[in-house]
Image 1 (cartoon, rainbow, N blue to C red):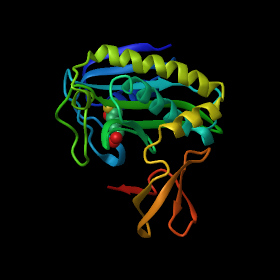
Image 2: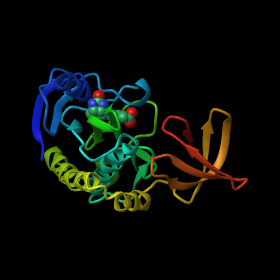
Image 3: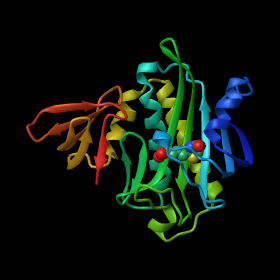
Image 4: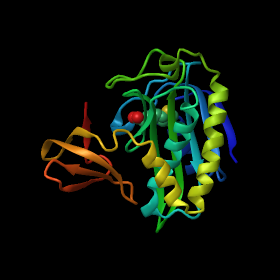
Amino acid sequence: MFRIIREKSLPSTNTYALELLKNKSIITPTVIIADVQTKGRGQSQNQWFSEEGKSLAFSTVLFPKNIKAERQFVLSQVVCLSLFRALSNYANGVRIKWPNDIYINEKKCCGVLIENALMGEGIAYSVCGIGVNVNNMQFSEGYLATSLYKESGQVFDLESILDEILSHFSDLYEKAEQQDYSLLNSWYHEYLYKVGELCNFEDKDGVFRATVVGIDQYGQLLLEDVEKQLRTYGFKELRWLV
Ligand code: BTN
């Protein structure tokens, strides 16, 4: 499905993808992989650290035809489910933490940065940046992190893990393009972190406790607070507290 562009070193595979899109050098589905990423970008202007030869840093560039802008969260579901499927072959306790992190046993193992360009009601292109801690023991700062190696005790071949992720990605992306949302939703819910559990959160009004119910069709997180009120949160409106 993908054309592959591999570079020895890039500041950021997402930034490079956006540059190539800008000058129209990419017009078909493409994966950009860097052996070394020197200025990896994370969510909220954070940096993402990758260890050369030990972790994966790549971006998929997609041109969705049948996915409406209002349904763009399905791309996050495709990425997370691909990662979930590939990693859960090798480790127990893999979970998808809303909106788009992969956790293993309460620690972050993969980070995802999706940058979409919307066009009218549709999506002109989507850059899905994916960082996977495979064999590394050094991590980005600011949160509890882990790697596949740390969780399983096994050393992995980076190319095999990448191939597995991309193979799941192609299958799941096809489902998204066919608008098979209910299937993708049911899988996403099945592997969702802390679903049914009471957790601590912080929103603009302060700290509160609530039970994770799931997500709605737009990818907003649904919580039931201790007064049994349903609360809905969009991306970046909520912080999980440990
Ligand atoms: C996060 O959890 O903060 C998101 C991290 C995303 C990291 C990946 S690595 C490949 C791609 N290129 C980047 O600069 N960022 C993403």
